[in-house]
Image (cartoon, rainbow, N blue to C red; front, side, top):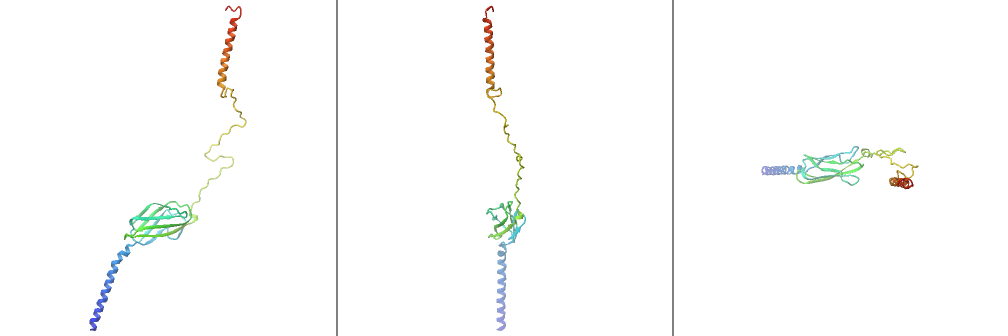
Length: 203
């Protein structure tokens, strides 16, 4: 009786262990299929002394295409991500527009895991003041000089008098000239007529 009872207990124990092992094997693929973030560039919480040009997220499994998104929000509240999310196996990346403001940036991502379930989270990085290029200021032109590319405005001479309207170069100059010519011709005609009318002229 004792031997039989012990054998039954051993068989029951073995059956339970086998069932647990098979159950664990059956659940393992499902657990592995749910993606987990392994690393990021920029790293979460990092302070950068150089402006990044992209965000790269690396997961433990390939990322499914469709429905993926990455948003990079700056201190100004604007999204600085450009273009579409690019996938390369377990990596998801997106380009960043040139950053010109120091401060904290957030990376909000949503990717589709290998098992079809969405995965989302938020990361942060800080851009140091030294990483932001200073704006280029134009130097003021020296006193007495016009800015480059601009021609100085011509000013009339101080002693230049307004043109006489009756002068030859004035607006009425041509009219006065014509009237003077007509008067001269009339005067010559009058003189000729008077000479002809003198007594003894034979006419």
